[in-house]
Image (cartoon, rainbow, N blue to C red; front, top):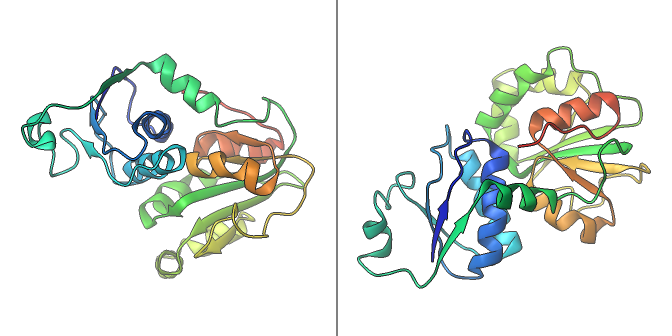
Length: 231
């Protein structure tokens, strides 16, 4: 299956998640080949794309032309064969997909934020910690980041852990908050930067969810209400 995008946006996490959402819906268990994807700065946006594609569909792997090493060209990705289907996604399609990841309205009271599904990487922590300058969590809002024990050890050794803990952020290791009894009933919505978390949490936890960027999540945690800038 070939997927062509007309996205001219920068390589934001939200863009990759929106594309992943649509790819999962349209691909089922087929292997998609994505053309037109902007080149990400790290593997983390690709990880997020794959996670949500496996949530809305059953995508086990994908090829991204000019990005994943085995797929420098369409011909290489398909091994000289023709695709069995070709789908084009526009920016409106991607925005609509991202909107479907939220069940909570703008400005709704916020009970918690949960980042890191898939687990936060060391690179994501290095990008996240500078955003904590001047950050304060609003009363009654809980803030979680899901990660692995290996990454927890690495950020501790790098001196990042005290900064994160001082900000009132709780790290959850080797599991995710949408599958374990960690979140309390705070009487409000939960915000996330993860398409996978947003897809599963309403049914698993019975909570309203708001999807947004990491910056949106921090801004909302400070105000105690859902605030988003959009794609």
